Structures are given as C-alpha cells and as structure tokens.
Length: 64
Image 1 (tube, one colour):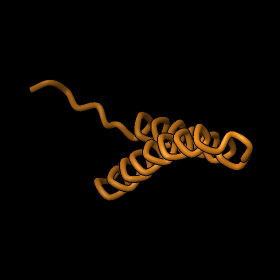
Image 2: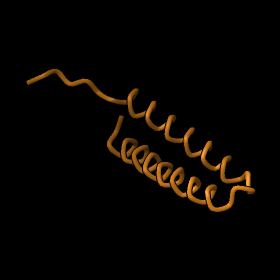
Image 3: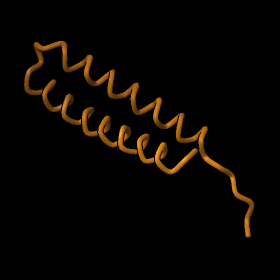
Image 4: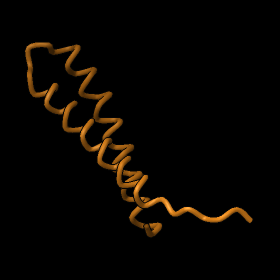
C-alpha cells in the first residue's frame, strides 16, 4: 500500500471515529431522532472497512 492510500484510510478512520462520538452525543441529546443511530452505524462501518484495508495493505518487512 502506498503512503498516500494509507494516509487516506487513516483520515477516513479518524473522521469516522469523530462521527461516532458526535452522533452518540446528538443521539443522547435528541433520543427521538433515528437518524443519529443510522449515522453511528455508517461511521462504524467506515471504521471497520478502513481498519481491514489498513491491515491488508500492511507490508511485512524482514527484521534487520
């Protein structure tokens, strides 16, 4: 995996993590709104996808 792709996946991962926290807070403030639960689920799926892609793209280097 190239450095740019890794950076993109890390940025998506960080943004989705912030999204989960934001949607959790908004869901606690406004419990009648179901959209916040959907937002949490979407962000969690983005986190899972980015982690899987980062693990697959990890290059194993032999020890020096």
